[in-house]
Amino acid sequence: MDKKTGIIIGVLGAIVLVLVLVVFGLETKSAGLTSSDVLRINNEIYSRSEFEDFLRYTLYKNDGEIKIDEEDEDTAHALENGTSKEEIFKSNTLNSFYQMKVCELVANDKNIVVEAEKLEEISGDFEKNKEKVEKFGLGKESFVNIEKGQAVVQMILNEPSKYLTLPDGVYDEYLKQFSGDDLKSYTYRMIQVSYTADKVSGETSGESGEVVPGNRAEKEAYMNEIVARIKSGVSFEEAAESGDNRLIFVGNGIQFAKSIEENAAGFLLEQKLNNEDAIKAVKNAKDGEMTDVIDTGDAFEIYLVEKVQDGIVGKAKDELIELMISSYANDLIYQYVKDMEVNNAALARIKIR
Image 1 (cartoon, rainbow, N blue to C red):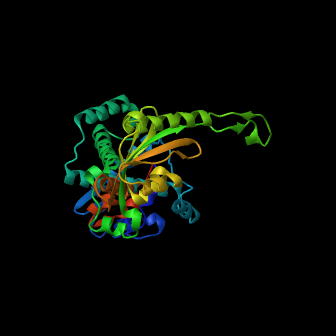
Image 2 (image 1 turned 90 degrees about the vertical axis):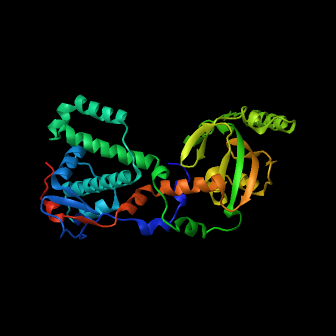
């Protein structure tokens, strides 16, 4: 994931609903469920047989292997306390089943529909792998329903801002930790020309060798030519066609381009520009001003700061909200859960093989 993902901290912690499972020594109530039920989410009850099909489906996807992440802290702790790999696998699978069912609640609320073309693809996958699927005890109906549910999960998690919203007050509360230039919105464009620095052959192995010349001087002259063209009246966008293609983060997506309009909250410039000189230059520029050439160590860059606005507004605000939703999509879907139960007794009776 991109460099920005780690910026959102703490604020959404209160909305996380953790599925509590007996395998980690925690208790959940199951008074409202019968012996043939394993899970209730709000008023929806999910049967033992439906979960067993999901277990079979997971084994099918794993080619029959019971896979767990033994380096995970909770998993390692459970193993140390004598919990079997099979029980941990079962619990992890229940978590995945739970996530899918919650996403289906979101889909029902937001009218998210799996397209007919995708359903045809799922049906075709079953026919193509029918012998293998049936070997794990799965019929076509169960396979199609699970694959459809998994498609819903991917639709929501791939475009979370299209379907999910932040809880009331979270956005404003998050901004309280920032002040000054961090709470300004910047609209800018950038031209980049990468270069290769001189290096000594064999230096990575500790041996001295000949200097292998790079192309820094050549690329610096090339960037200066671009700057001269802009100063002579060529538009920044037109001049950018002479620069490098680069990965540009826009919202939660990535574009490969030379120069497009970029927008960012002041506190996100560090993650987007990743260079102190560039950040300082952009923050100090006035509307419509171009920065001096900045040497980042492997590229020359210039910025056109088109607009600086007080507050997080416009596209900068839209991008920040999109990023926050994306960063916490897995947690935000659980806003739809008002109440839940796990029937641990029924779960314990389920055999993986």
